[in-house]
Image (tube, rainbow, N blue to C red):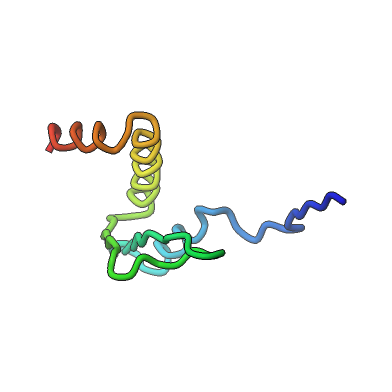
Length: 92
């Protein structure tokens, strides 16, 4: 048997949540929290006491950060952690 699932209706685009948050706080920074999760057993669990909180100026900065993180993780996958860390230290 084969089964596939597709959501019948899309209620919002992935970016809409960011745009809604920006609209709810006009002129104020958007707070973004990043917390890694570890796969344990059959589910992901938060890595306790490990998180980053960033204050972004606006929705565009949130989207730019997302794009930068995509590139960062792609670079790690392609070149390895040591090479990426070395390049970041050179740039710092």
